[in-house]
Image (cartoon, rainbow, N blue to C red):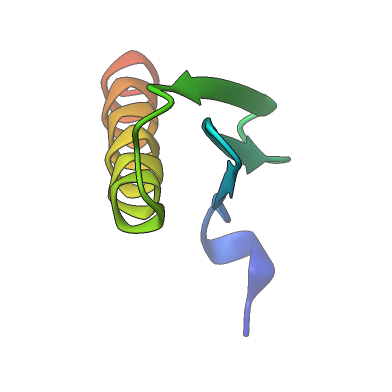
Length: 67
């Protein structure tokens, strides 16, 4: 795999007793973001939210880095 060809973005979520959060990390984009989610979120909602937040970061990065 040619690591120079693309950008890696990692997302993760967590669900503890009455607490939920997700986060995004990318070295190439110099991005580390953590989000608190509503306490009632279940694991599936946290996973979907982490994916959505990652897509939002990608979209904003693509818009602001276009030539």
